[in-house]
Image (cartoon, rainbow, N blue to C red; front, side):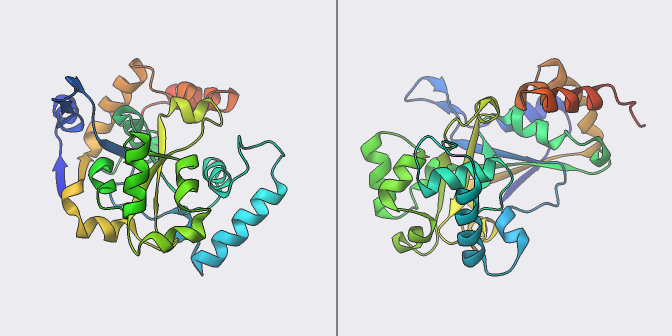
Amino acid sequence: MEEIRVDSWAELQEQLFAGSWNEELGLHRSNYAFRGRWDAADDLSTSLAQVGGDAAALEGNLLRNFRKYAARGAVPVDTPWNWLALGQHHGLPTRFLDWTYSPYVALHFVTSKADWFDRDGAVWMVDYVRAHQLAPQAARECLERNGTNLFTTEMLESIADGPSDLRALGEDFVIFVEPPSFDDRIVNQYALFSLMARPDSSLDEWLRDHDDLVRRIVLPAELKWEVRDKLDQANITERVLFPGLDGLTRWLVRYHRPRRR
């Protein structure tokens, strides 16, 4: 895996947008999904894996009961994939992992916790276009039919009725999917999810076998304050990314908190 430790804001920008020029389109359009972590030591384990136990049984029980007790009309179409995406959005342990199209949204999550400013953070970057080239034939054909590089939950349903059916397509692969726009938070965070063929699969292990698809930018602890200040000036804040009074409160508390030297 390519790992780059940056020393300045300018170098950080250069690395985040490296390779984004698309000659065919004549535009800067990155094929990377970004994930920001305030601790560089974090791995890419899902919330479902972190619970422990039998991942397949736990996933089925959680999804069934979430679907049973959630409000009617909570999803645009009643499918397991939409319920799983909604559950992920609200903190249900799932096989999904949060990513974003935006490198600046990823940087927000690297610098959102002032108590962690004494340690390095990291931005993970995965080339989802090339990752999908390694997906099973049915998945590749679905993308081709729809003329896109990313799945929607409706496209997922066309190749697998639900999470338990995904493994029938292949033993080990990763898919990136755009969730429905349940609310402004998903829209403003420019969100997408990754998922593996099996609920207990490890994206870390998969990427070790395909390390040409991933880059990791390490943000030194001493650079975090500068990045945070510049994100605030660019309006990449909790007030925007978490619309509503809760996000407003989180932004105000962090923004006005005395800086610790």
